[in-house]
Length: 584
Image (cartoon, rainbow, N blue to C red; front, side, top):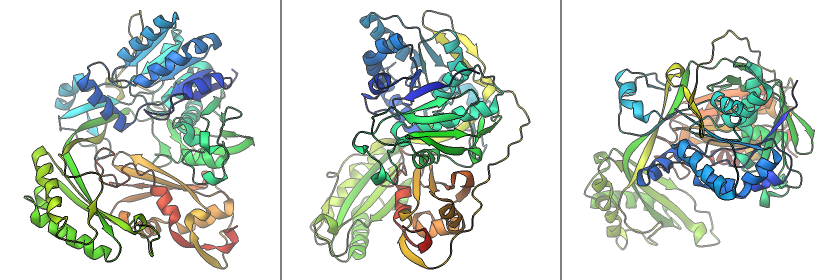
């Protein structure tokens, strides 16, 4: 049995705290420094960067961080694994090598590529090898900006086997940068399902950085040091169990609540699909084993699908919005007049656009104590392939209404403007056998690592939840969030919304109360949508997957919160009848 390996995170997204790498390297003992820089939207951003400057489709901020910590990492024997390579992992590796040369250092740097399918798209489309992730229909649309398969951990393992000090990948899963170091350290095989599942779970918890240590936590008012929240690490044991923690003296906390909250982030059902293993989230057990230390154990895994998920971004055309403020009384009447007058003065009608939506955001308060509290916002949005149609031909019409319609008229976000391009996210899948990983140690020859995982028959037994009765008796109308926490986020064009309880009795009541129908009642925006409900009793949680809430993905969404980050907090604000026995 090998000793546990401590794997630290220093980035949850492209743009996270620049000082985090130094904080994690110098703030306490770690074996690996990792970070997650990529998301579906990030790949689109990198594609636009690459179009302006070929070869620059990677996270330059990672290179800057390496300049700060590379020497310390080499001195302490800390290895670095990151997906900051984005669309150009080879150029990212070269940039890091240039920094090393400037510092007089000589690390072994490797990169993993092969996930980029763009050079092969013509052949893949012609042979129907790319299929939609949800429908299974062949992908035919060819106007792609990016197309990247999600790799797992085995290319990273191979790079580490070759002695790499720094491993840079393209599009891997978020958890792969944790699973790879753990699998290499513990010498796991590809069919060590439970161990791999445990490492994937640890990777899922720490991949968003401070979201595991109090960030975006529903009960943040109970957490100390939130002004400067520390980043997390996972100490992964040989059996795949792990302890989630953070460096002593840093802000925030690691608790069953913060870990549960992050476990619910951007998931679907209990089968968490990945390229290395299918992790069963209905088997996760949590235990508070000390201050800022939570142990995750009992996690079971199954073989993964024979396909890899593919992130496709394509051009969606152009979009534009106008935002009109409605103040004081008669908000509904003012909104109706503005909408009718706007379209009557426009060259085009809603049906002339590929998509036209109107949203009335009731941000106004009753008996407002300030001018701002009296304001609601009407947002009219359009999308179309024709840039001219969504440009001034659309937005200039708002000027006709300024002095001619409602009292108190004013706008936000500037005056009339031109349409801007947007991207559309499309999830696909491809046979893992057709997308091998290529591992390159700078100065050496490429090595091919198969993405195929052998099939097997595995039996998984879900972990039972609490066996208690839901309390009855008198109730009181209070916000749902007085008792329950939540975490929500984007899943392509879908949104996930996880809700968790902090006691067995509270879970028993939540499970009986929060049905799909009740969720739609509390969140009317979801009434016409398909909503999947997935209880996770061992985590005292329930997760909802809301199909189509974000339209064609984050970059295309016309919602005010296009990533559904606040969806759970909206639900927590809804007032319901809760048994008094559950209330403080």
